[in-house]
Image (tube, rainbow, N blue to C red; front, side, top):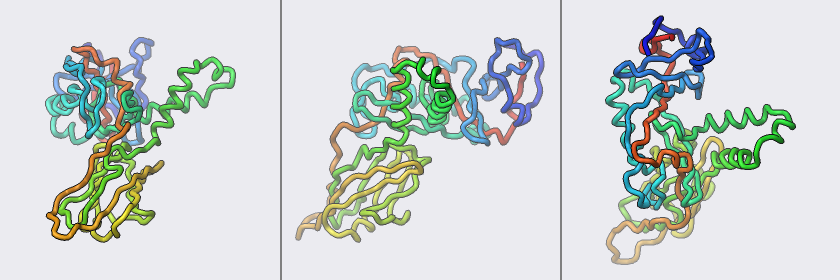
Length: 317
């Protein structure tokens, strides 16, 4: 809609904007960001130096997943409604590149998203800059807990058991860390490749690892986002005695452990990688993406935008 008044907004004004444009308030507003005067609601904040922006109009149309067949995600078989494995998720980074200029893209921050994989019964974390509005963020879950805790005992008694159970399950899932790939792996001395493990926690919360209770120096392994992928380097593995070992992945609010084995190299054996793939009922999640299964689902995007800068955010309606 056209603006009747336009002005630059300060950071304090952005934080104070009312996102309800139907209540008659003069402070109801959207901001402009991106090509074609794309408008965004200020939907909240995940930190003191950021704003959560929710697109005020559709960014396009696309199928969530064209196939109804089960998909693969991080080595696991998942349902077709799995957000992490969806076609629409792979399209969003391309959309961000076309929608925002280089300066705007540099200010977009990653949000940690948690969704539920109904096939494998676990929660997995994603870290995206632009994502569908159906995803649950940690900030949303914690905000829901604060609202519930603020209720009187009588008000709490009016909350349905289903809603209360859902909140409790989501809160538990935030710290229900699991190693979803690599548990039970075997590494043979003399192998020139490392040992890969994947934990389902958000990389932004990753705090380090230990083996058999001893902290491992960062030079002895690599760790990258997705959700948290850790590779023990062969040089480190060579220092471990043959036998069973325990890897612990630590996060700022919890940890998870798994087992692996180091084996001596048989006499005359040729160097090969013997890392075994984990099997079992572990993975990621997608309950929040079920509503977006229909082909042609409208892309309502959400981004986390730095508010240390104001030159691109204009418009008060």
